[in-house]
Image 1 (tube, helix red, strand yellow):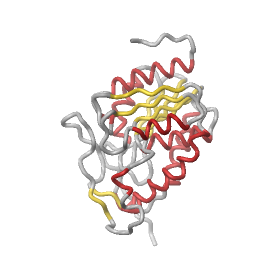
Image 2 (cartoon, rainbow, N blue to C red):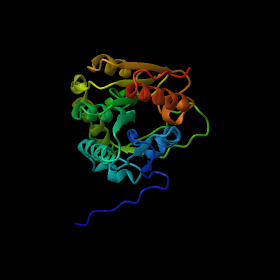
Image 3 (cartoon, rainbow, N blue to C red):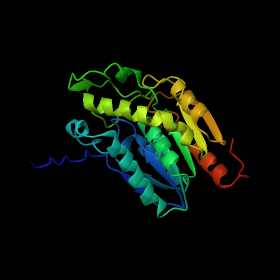
Image 4 (cartoon, helix red, strand yellow):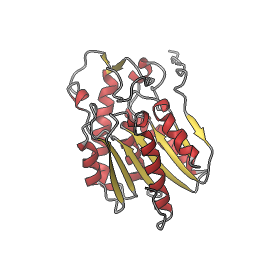
Length: 256
């Protein structure tokens, strides 16, 4: 049987900016695409960093492709992107929005040479999906409007998500959650005070359970779940840049 090849939706492609020897791997969230971290990626690239944002399998194409994916595919995708970036950068930091945040944590637990992790509303709990954990129907679950406070922002996503993909997201969380203590590199956690997808205490949980001696948590007061596309994206870029410089240069003076 011939495998169906799905086209990538316009604007959902992976992106890469060549900058200095410090690389940032940006990972989008569940049902999202690199477009959801596109503006953040450009802001970081404008600060001189080399930025790579891969597109996870089944995302940005067709929900039927996502239906056939396993969470191990997403782990493989971000790992391959990291190894690619590692070849051209002296130091690599991993940043992720929502599911991308927990994928970043898993990567940091496996590769101890990673210089630091930045999470944005990392998804250690997704209550809206948890009720489907033991169900096999419906085949597709209707998705609401992306959780963004700013008006007029369009995120490339699917109008319905396969229940199999929801199962894989929940299994990914179960796989990664017990491994948080394996993360020992510097950690910067962003959490929106108002998030209608992932409870803010999800970020508190990961903050408390990693083994990192250098870690910081920053509350976002003007963004909802997809904060990388929301009002606080410049704050995320600025604080991320400061934190990276602090990790690389301990006597770096953080801007106010």
